[in-house]
Length: 77
Image 1 (cartoon, rainbow, N blue to C red):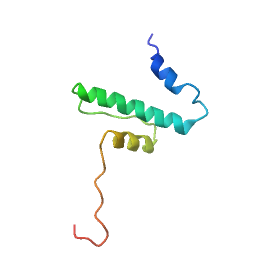
Image 2: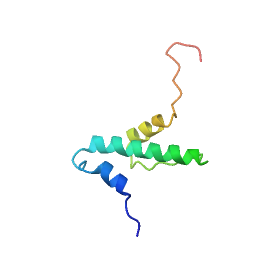
Image 3: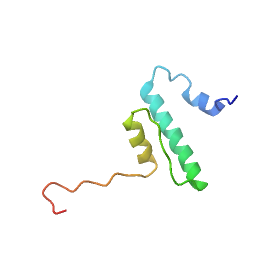
Image 4: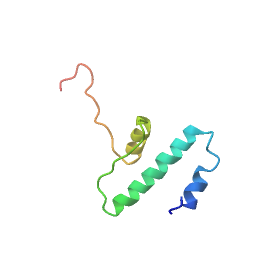
């Protein structure tokens, strides 16, 4: 049986009643893992955020993935 790494247990300790902070920590941990995997050649990632689009958005932002800006209203496309 696998155990949760002690580092992660400590990071999430006492956050049961602080969902916003728990989400920030989770997104940061996920970004760190992705950056480490990318350094080792992994190119593609799939995130399961259970319909929490703000987590996927924050994670992509931390990884440098940005949405293309929409053209300004009235400008030529």
